[in-house]
Image 1 (spheres, one colour):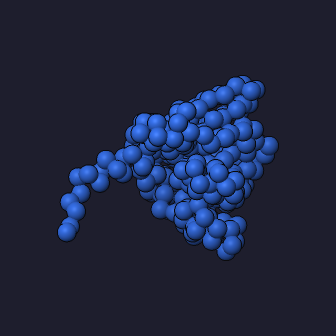
Image 2: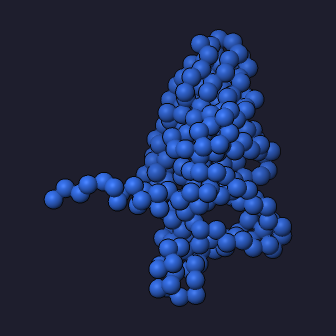
Length: 227
């Protein structure tokens, strides 16, 4: 699987080149166009129970797309639902990533996608719910964001604080705790930040420049309310 980001910026696509017989998995609805040699199927990743847990516990779609180069080599064009950047990562079979529920766009058929349960405090306060996606295995992983993607490289024991609504993905070698954005509860909420994640390295953290919840609140003020 060879991949390339086209039109980097707010409205990108990713082109994936498949050899004959090769296949990839993608978010349902991600395919924009493809060669006539490619067949598109729907698949429940991890079987029925795995798909069910993703749907009802993380909010991810029940099915993934499987794009298979059945009749020779070909290419597929994929794009996310929201405007924002795309980042391509290579998993080596050792490194694993935790991904927020809307961050997965596509990946090699050799990667494994599971629902991972967070602790009680993280689930209640972290903004992503009790479950996130754990992605492991070996091969290409394509993530997308709402807004631009910024990568933070943490050295051992180095700390960094991230607003939980701006998280895209982080390597499993990092540890993190949920805490108030300020010293007091009232100030945390009135500041508009609420709760943040304090990460500790080593590892990588990918964040997005826009907050989906804040954007949704901004949109709602322009929607007429019926009485």
